[in-house]
Image 1 (cartoon, rainbow, N blue to C red):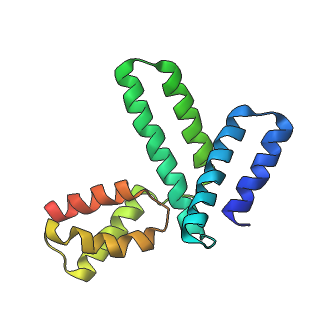
Image 2 (cartoon, rainbow, N blue to C red):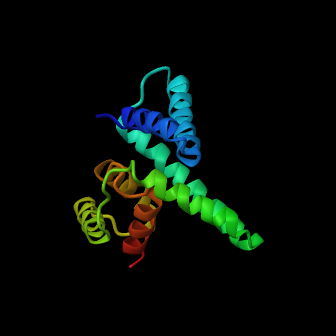
Length: 148
């Protein structure tokens, strides 16, 4: 079943159960998916939907950072709940060990040796990861390996 269908079914369940938080999150996700489809004038694939989910999680993490500075525990708790909810729709991620191995092998295959080649390495690693790790996490590990 496609991720978009899973979200639609989850929205129907949330409406039946009157789960306001779930309805809010799913409607936002489906809205973002629909907006991207309108922009592209075509249906989007699973990887693009996964990218939307990661983007929403990233936005919630940024909200948490701002809320910590303002000492707003209510916003922090709501954002953490949202993140946990959104993560249930993501595919099972790569372990950090597997991700490091994949990146290390890709760097070795390419013969990359400096940070100047980070963009090239990222172009090869991101499709291999395919939503199983955040781009930010991949970027940090690539940078770590290329700096050494």
